[in-house]
Picture (cartoon, rainbow, N blue to C red):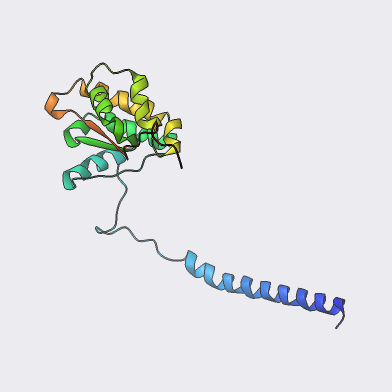
Length: 177
């Protein structure tokens, strides 16, 4: 068979295959578009305002987890708004952050408690971690002072604690990969 003949056969098969796909889609799509949308039943989730829903989760569960935003400002802002909610300290006692070197937990505890700790020392909590993106995040520049400010208005027994969740790595002693 010549090159022209094989190309012609290939083009014929491509066009034929395309028609088969198009006809199949035309048969399936109208049926899919005509499906009835039913109202959610009681067992299906329904949307509700996020902050009250998350705070209500603390009434049912001992631990409520949320991911850190990793540079997504809208999620960062949401987490800060959640912490600012007046009912937050009544529901929560500990906030764990993955971007926190637990080697500096005593420094973080003193800062959050309102003691005189230079912010340059506090920065080590999230800058000296095993998570490279943490050192660049402006979120931690905001969350720690926010929790500190909230704690100054609370009785000692109701104060929030921030827990550094990263392993206690002393980078001054790490010499190899």
